[in-house]
Image 1 (cartoon, rainbow, N blue to C red):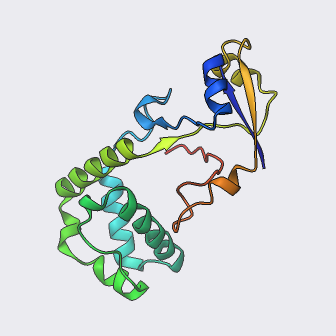
Image 2: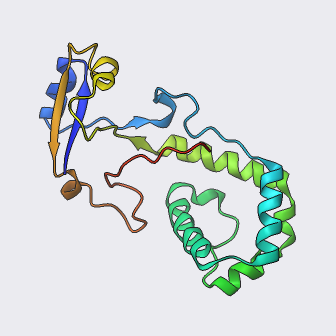
Length: 175
């Protein structure tokens, strides 16, 4: 896979030529809303009510397992419960009264996001070298450089979760 990095300075090019890549901490990204903690209490209550009524689907359980593995790596100190091992166990856990304490859940959510923001860096790349906004914004109004990176997936093979240490496209969503 061929990817491109837009940079505005000669020193960035020289550092990359020496094998250094800068992973930007989430706090330093150009969108201040990146990973900003928000807990929509009515949505949490409605979701919990729906899950308790209908039970968790296999797809939801698989998602829960994946997110549990990611959080075990990024914020283990905030872990309260182990992820359930079976779908039946997951559905049983939904009945626990601990899920009624939204103040505690919000506190844990904010602490988890704080940990992730402190531990995760992003390497922003593009699949296109001819993007005028990228040249303007990241390559010093087109006075900078674009670096070609081939086969990064050979160096960044991922981890057991399939989410970390691996090149993948950003998925933009409304929420």
